[in-house]
Figure 1 (cartoon, rainbow, N blue to C red):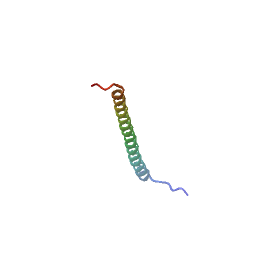
Figure 2: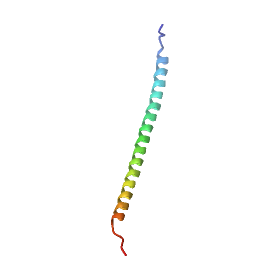
Figure 3: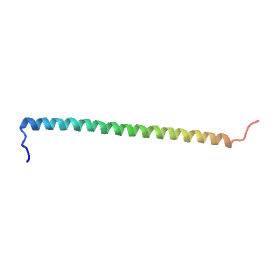
Figure 4: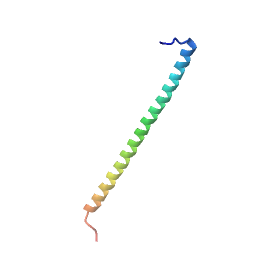
Length: 66
C-alpha cells in the first residue's frame, strides 16, 4: 500500500530532490562546457594546420631564387 507522508517528510523529500536536480544540472552544464571547449580546440588546431599547409604549398610553388 501507499504510505501517506507528513508535511515535514514531504518537505524533506522535495529538498533532497532539489539538491539532486541542482547537482545533475551542474554536471550537465560542465559536460556542455567541456564539449564546447574540446570543439573549439579541435577547430583551432585544424585551422592552424590548414594555414601551415597553405604556406607550405605557396613556398613550394614559388621558383627557387639563385
